[in-house]
Every structure is written in structure tokens, then in C-alpha cells.
Length: 204
Image (cartoon, rainbow, N blue to C red):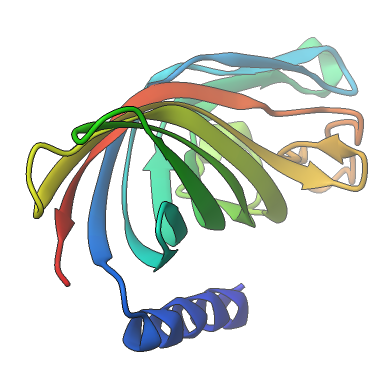
């Protein structure tokens, strides 16, 4: 995962260094809704929570940009383990994503935008009570929203966003019961939907 992150970072930095257009610093915040998934023994749930992050946007041509960003949340979660035991705890859910963003100006101040993002999702700081190990998965995401830019330097975006860690045709974080070799079914899925926004500062 470290090599992937470094590759993404160097890639965006190289584009930013050669770009003739703007480079913008992004700061994210939003509310992610709870998501229920099916496990081998029953069901699990990732509770709702606050998601935060930061990123960098490089304009590659008018109304088209490339972004790299990091987002994180630390929600409560549970899943049904073996012997009908419900395991509860907290989990850190992280995304590092690279995406393309297209803007559609409505006037001099307001633009609509959409993005398609790819990257990695990984867990961290899992509670011991969940009896699980950290995992890393390929991830997909996308956003639709509005950008409000009253000036050249500072702008604001509001968006609806979907993020999903995937494995083949399924998606999900996989929790093991530890020692027994059992795990959540590979049919489990996690689709995280959030409403949020970003305050952005143009640095070039």
C-alpha cells in the first residue's frame, strides 16, 4: 500500500509541477450514513459518523481537474461472530483516492461537478473487542455536487459521495474470529454514502 500511495503522490505532484493552470488545496468534512452488511453468521453494521480529510486538485485543462485525497472516519461497528456472539467496537476506515473531476459552470460563481475516483481503502485502530485484523482493499468512489467560488482564491464545494472497498465483484471489510480461521462471507458488501463538502484554497 505504501508504494501505491507514493506512486499516486509523485504522479499528482509531477502533473502539478507541469500544469499551466491552478493547483488547489482541499479540506473535506461530512456525515457518513450507517451501512448494514451480511456476514457468514448473520449481519453486521458500520454506524454513521463524521468523515474528514484533505487533498490536492490540479487543473489539467479548463473545467477538468485531477485530484488526490485522503478521507477517514472512526465509527462504531458490530458483526455477528460464531456461536451467535455479537462483537462490538470501533474501527478506523481510511481512503486514499485518485480521481478525475469535471466542472459544468452555471454562471461566474456556481458550477456543478462530478468525479470518478479509484484508490485504496484500509482499516486501522480496530478495537480488540472486534477480534479482527486490518485489511487493505482496492476502492471505487464518486461525487456529485456544486462548487461556489466567489473569488479567485477561496471556494467551497458541497457534495453527495459514495465510497466502496471492492474485491472482485463484491465489496467489503473482512473481519475474522481469530484463531478459528472463520471470517465474514466474501459476499459481504460495504457501500458508504456521505453528504459533505470542502473548503478550498487555490495555492497557484
